[in-house]
Length: 291
Ligand SMILES: C[C@@](CO)(OP(=O)(O)O)[C@H](O)COP(=O)(O)OP(=O)(O)OC[C@H]1O[C@@H](n2ccc(N)nc2=O)[C@H](O)[C@@H]1O
Ligand SMILES: Nc1ncnc2c1ncn2[C@@H]1O[C@H](COP(=O)(O)OP(=O)(O)O)[C@@H](O)[C@H]1O
Image 1 (cartoon, rainbow, N blue to C red):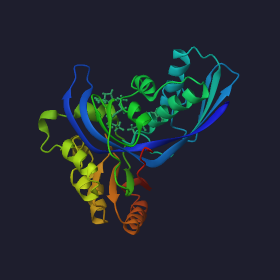
Image 2 (spheres, rainbow, N blue to C red):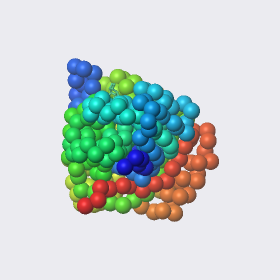
Image 3 (cartoon, rainbow, N blue to C red):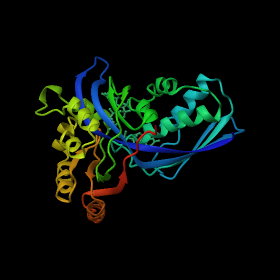
């Protein structure tokens, strides 16, 4: 095989709790993760030049070692002594620095894709162990579906699939870095924390209303204080018929869960014309592992 086409899907966090801060600055988390059908496209091709060449549709994305896609390819090439070069075409659709793990998912797709392209026969467990050296969310982006993530996000337990629904994604006109949000979080100041065990039960019972009522993200304590637009978008989402709404990950993206396609489409339209607070809006569905 000389080339491969891949899809790298985004994730949302249905719940995000922090247990403590580790001495190395990372945080021990308990999160419920869900893959959604919003995806970047990648094309990987073996080339004769001995280098990694990245082409992307977004001019502001790095094409050197700062791109997580480059990091993933470089890691595999070094680990398995592969000198042959690689051309990577990355078509971004997932909003960047948005709390949707776009870069992590691109890296996960490259690890998985190169495993096939070079016949490495690595298990998902092997790929996840490589992935965590790139980023805390990369192992989950390899596993995908509904999952409990613990440790720094790399200790994964697959959960029953979440029931089908519509997910409305709204990215406000602001940029927030993950490292900044974690650095500002004060774990002694959380007034409410999501009940992760109750969320797992709600998922098990396939009850969308119960799932929505269990949603919670402690990182909102940092972002909403600095960017009230996040809270405004959450409230608008509920007013427009979402049964639950929350910020995903470190934000600033807000998502809404809808069980009614008409309401979801109308809400998408309303958010798309609200250019004062919304930069990007997408209506999508959830993605679950097969089998
Ligand atoms: C917040 C979450 C929720 O799913 O996602 P995003 O909002 O980034 O999508 C993740 O925990 C983000 O995972 P990821 O984006 O892979 O993190 P990394 O690149 O490994 O780390 C970026 C920075 O975030 C902080 N970090 C990350 C993970 C973690 N458990 N504790 C942390 O304190 C560290 O300061 C680190 O330097
Ligand atoms: N393949 C990639 N796609 C998007 N951003 C990338 C990629 N590689 C590196 N980056 C850099 O990583 C940062 C965070 O990107 P992203 O993964 O989209 O964030 P998040 O995890 O919050 O969704 C951005 O500032 C971007 O410049």
